[in-house]
Length: 116
Length: 112
Image (cartoon, rainbow over all chains, first blue to last red; front, side, top):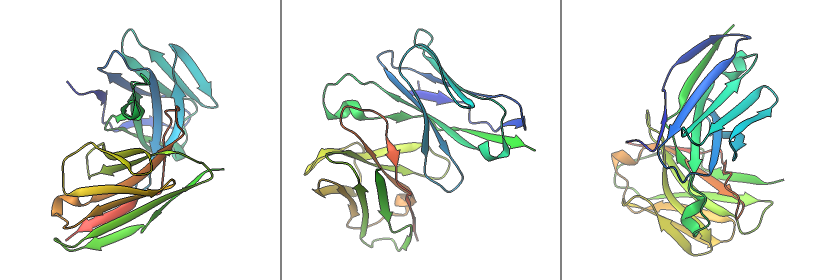
């Protein structure tokens, strides 16, 4: 079983629509969850962090976490063509047990295309 | 504010040649540092991480090595490159006891 799974896509949405990106993880001890955006040919950029069950909103982005279901999602409202990128989900166990607890495990990413 | 630099931005090297990629972080002290590789069509693979000067942990056995000679400097090396070493090499940093990682601009390596 893969540690962090994402639908590779591509996910295609029209401009102005809500884009919904999903991620599941296998380690029930995971505590910290992140979404990164990666434009083609560029490095990943952190856009959201979430640590507690529920929703966290930042501008047009909402991260949702359900630890019981081992599921984290990212909603992008009013999608713009500039949102077209690969979105990476990352998970951390965060048990403060030494240097290894800082490691992030990444999914392979979902390619989002927003059509004008 | 914190800034992370990587160089070179692109590199084309023949098989069997040595490699040295450098990463430096500005605006923070005692960061955790990481080297990742992203091969075409594959996810981010953690290669090495470091929690302090001279402290290197290796995630994947391979012909690569890493060193941290100064607090904010992280170097990725190889004595002899393989074709399979081609990829996008990314350095990242995080603040101690915080899990958010921030990536540098990356080095795109092509081994021919």
